[in-house]
Image 1 (cartoon, rainbow, N blue to C red):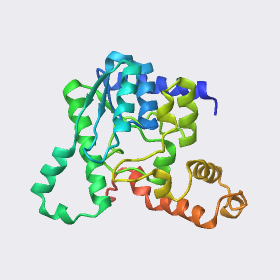
Image 2: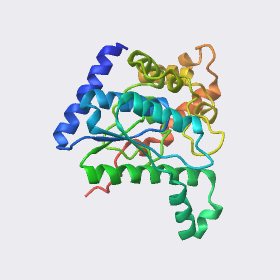
Image 3: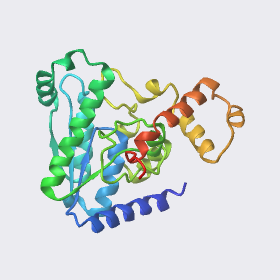
Length: 255
């Protein structure tokens, strides 16, 4: 990948799409991780720092203080307007209104948190006549590793054409603070969660598999790659198949 070409293509994309929509700027959810850091950085380059609002949405007792610190560090580095909104009270209000939530499984609660954050971003985007900038990368999108109408509920996905490993590469090129680049990726939806542990494969390996699948290599050939097991390959392929509905508009019955 030519990093300079990729960078310029994304910047032009953000600038053109926001111009076509007639909006006054952008809102970005800043988690303290590298994906949102890169998306915010490219948005600032496209629109200027005065037209970008960064919102950090931690949950008390769960979001690591390191993430909140890194989110603020990034916002200061970019020079953008920045807000922190603790979602704990919203979660508590939901649980009080819906008694069944007391027995909800971890996935249901995790998805709820992602959708609460989406609602907060859109509230601010609507009141400011701005667009919500997504932070999903190509690896996550292909695997369906996002919450439908949560972090997948956005107006633009500027880094959606970059594999996770390419996100790291471009972030280094742009000089994004190193603490965000070296951090273990995590959606932060429950204690101790990390992306790679949940996926059962490293981003380096999964990107290699995805690139080969994109080039229409057959599974038998991919399995000859050192370090990639049949179990890991099957897991990746199953995730792609099961998450197809997340990448498509809701189906409508034919006439």
